[in-house]
Amino acid sequence: MDEKQLLKDCLDGNRQAQKRLYDQFAGKMFALCMRYARNQQMAEDFLQEGFIRVFSKLDTFRGQGSFEGWIRTIMVNTSLELLRKNDLLKKSLSISEAFELPDQLELPADRLNEQYLLSCIQSLPAGFRAVFNLYAIEGYTHKEIGELLSISEGTSKSQYARAKAWLQQRISN
Amino acid sequence: MENRKDHIEQLFAEKLGKLDMQPPQMVWHRIDARRKNRRIMLLFRYAAVVVLLLASGFTIRYFLTQPENQTLTKQLVLTQAGNNSLQNAVDVAEAVTASSAVSGSVETLVSASRTATPTASNDTGKSETRQLTATESEQQLADATMLLSSAMPEDKNSEIVSAGTTDHLADSTDSEDLSTLLLALIPAPEIADDVPTLAVQNVNISLAFGQTPGFNSGTNGSDGIAGANFSFDKFAGDLAYETRYFEEVERTDFSMPLSFGLLFSYPVSQSLLIESGLQYTRLAHENSTFVINDYQNRYKTNLHYLGLPLGIRFVMLKDKRIRLFITQAFVLEKGLGSHSVTERYFKGKLYETSRDNTHIRGMQLSSVSSGGAETSLVGKLSAYVQAGVQVFFLNETQPFNMRSEHSAWPSFQAGLRFDLSAENKRGAIKNTH
Image 1 (cartoon, rainbow over the protein chains, first blue to last red):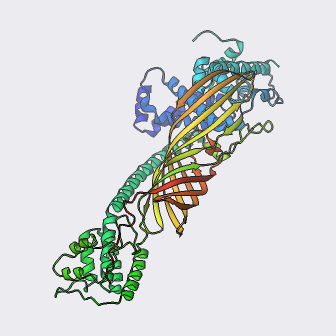
Image 2: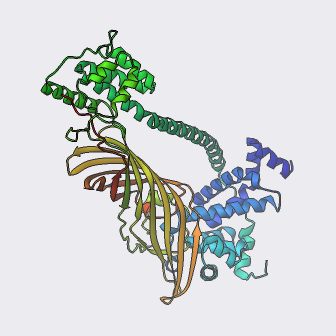
Image 3: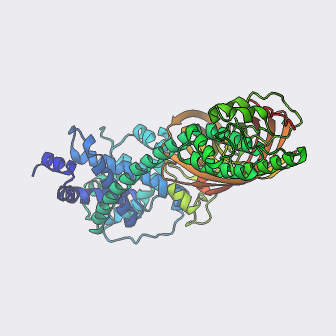
């Protein structure tokens, strides 16, 4: 079944079609959510909320650009919104505190495997984590990040530089 | 996109950018369940809106039709009382009150009065009037007045007609419709200033100034690595969406919220009033971030709300000088907007300021329970103070504010109340005895 037909069936409320759409993108989107979340449980919450929004906003997808890109944007925005709600002001550490953290991560033989890199990102303070993800992986500019997170471009650059330095230290140690 | 990636960026982008990780199967089940619940909730919301509209319609209709009926009711009853039939007056009061509640029409009132009080009009054209002494008449009148005041709500048009054995009444009962007869009572032949009237309550308008004392919550520094940088109440904090700071907040200071507005009070009985109106509330707070690399940001936020209070006020004690009351109200508030000023500091010196206005989604519901006192100042002007507790039912739509930290706050309100009634003592027909 092609993507257009799948979307049409989803819009018609076809539960089987919705499940197929979920199965098609859940893996990639879960990995994305894992990068923004502190742990797997939080990532599952992001994924759940993100897909609920995908289904409820499906009628606004105009077919311009890739559907995967559209879903990815929703997932990123949902993750950021839930981070604002749940994480940042409650439990987030400053980067200076993060530097003082004892080595909570066991260094694997292959320090460049995906799981280790993911756990490095997850151990960043939430604000730094978001900026690093948006800039290094999603490809946003600092200006766009500033607008997205309501921070200045300078703050975005500053947080990104510190996050990258910390990650570099983790990898090269 | 510019080619800007260095080694670290490339490493993370390549390894994690296209990573595929299968989530647990239960995630899909939760999504499916949420979507079903969402549909049910939508149905409930539509049903609630319909019920609310219907209830509002009936309430408005009730209050629009009620005053006329009550006026006639009192006049009827007191006419009977003046005709020295106290028991009949009681019967009429009960019958008319019951009938007016059902039909609300003048015709019904008249019909009921005729049914219940055969002495009021008879076939021979004479009222069965028993002559009383002045003392007896006054006593019966006082009894009837007390009875009525406890049996029926008052309204702005009601006036107590101190009718004795009025000859013009007796003469006209036979040939004229009773309602016409009663209307003839209104232009009183003599105004007796010394005749006591029942306290006539009317629509009042209040100018209210309220405060919910906000406490300077001070430093919210992190208490250990695992501690929070911000001392949120867990429940409230979880629900405070749209907090916009993607930085580490070191300190939050709340300003004392201010509100003012207009309240209208409408009496439904001698001691009970319904109150509603409009009120404006301003919430303000300032967030300061940790100093990182000599940089620090301070966010000053003002939230503006317009609220619709709806509640009741019960007057417990009435004195010549002071009235004590308790109130219970619900306030539905809609955010008008959020205005924030961001100040950026480098080495303690302000180097940049930016302003931002954002929309506030959703509504805020709260409950205010309070008690207070009111005293007359000049004429129809009185002043009141009240204190109590305001409980906020937080929801996911409201931006962070002091209500996010605790859901219950003490509430103080002071204001001026003005009686809008055209006449409080319109006068009374002098007892001719």
